[in-house]
Length: 407
Image (cartoon, rainbow, N blue to C red; front, side, top):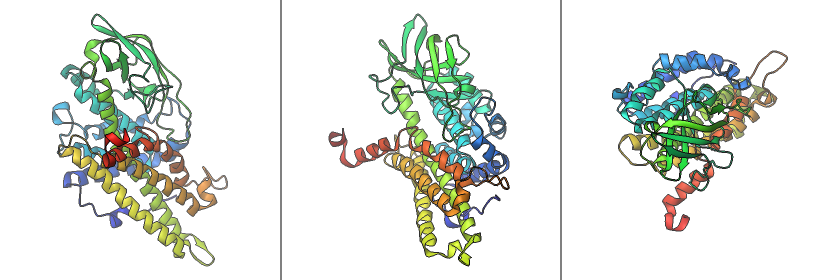
């Protein structure tokens, strides 16, 4: 199906983003249109495997400098005045064509890369430079078979202990994005002496075993797998932050990440909206265009308003951080649950608008396929990862009622 008109260009008037951010949006959009759009269907429908990892697009993002966007000039980045806002806008534009690519970028640049800004100068020089130039793929491991939303010391079972100038890790992480192709993983561990620590582990270290990629409902280009650590020795110098700072660093990364996930929700909602409007304006039923029916006119007017609100929320949350705020609540939590749930609502509407065509992965008669089915599968994980939407509502409720009431 042909690419539809980008209706955000006429419906949305960005009075929040400064000129450098609008230029980043144009740059990333042009990149995504050229390199991601032609591969999006294949990425979304191939089963997960190391061979199917979209390495060509990853390498091209590095080549075109997209991995430089979040970082300071001192670290080899672009040194933008509003790096968090630029990163969030990048997530939206990538997700418009492929939420898998947006998720790879999110974990590589936000969870792994931005967390390395708290590492020692030596680690930053060695590993952050590799993240920025695409020499390696970064991963971030907090989730375990029995610990995901709750990452407290009582729940985390991946253990570490000090042995001279090394930590020794033993444990098991689950659903670790990028791990099958990663060069390093930031691992949240629990130590009896040092509390929660975040350790940088090279994936080729003795005792590290990365499992076969999981087969998922959607986001099939985003590889996840279990990672086992069997007495893995890691230099103490590979600790990110101080002893006891691990949970703080992990939660800080996830808080930043949820702004990016809110932005990906907007990207997915926008692409389905655009395809749906094109279909409503061209498909006929009962002698008139489907878009002539008032039901669809009113519904799409409502969705356009929601996309406007969702985009403003994530832009505002990111801008607050760029302007020096310690945290971006309640906007960050709102942006995450509002944007991702909107993507789901819009995807359901899109399938209904396309009817039987929208339900097809591929129509056998002519090989045609439609974006709405892909987004319907991809959006769901965004309501779950990097802090479930229920948790985001708890965060917002805490802003309303205070911790003394909400706990």
